[in-house]
Amino acid sequence: MKVQYGDACLSLQQVYEWTRKFMNAISSVTDSPRPGQAHCVVTPEAIAAVEAIVKENRRIAVNEIAAHLDMSHGSEHHIVHDKK
Image 1: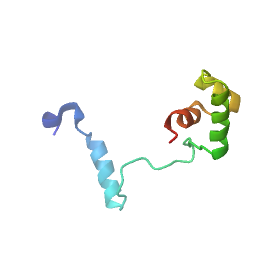
Image 2: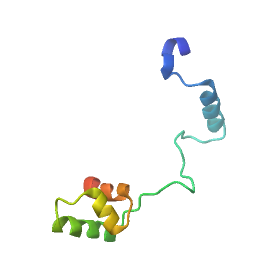
Image 3: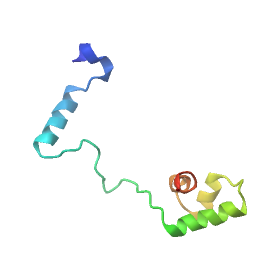
Image 4: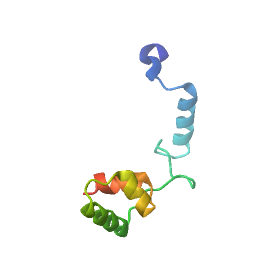
């Protein structure tokens, strides 16, 4: 397979790992949530607070909003850019 696919080929270890997972009835190879993994929690209150700050000053930086509301840069960015 390495000759055919080159560097895009899965390692033998990865093939064994996926085979073991499928034999144990795990049908997805994506990472499952872990206890220490960060979560993006966007509440209606946080959305309202960000909107109020942006309405006051449209030229405010993302980092300034995150610092002012004591939230992560990622959560604030999600509210400003991905809110539909």
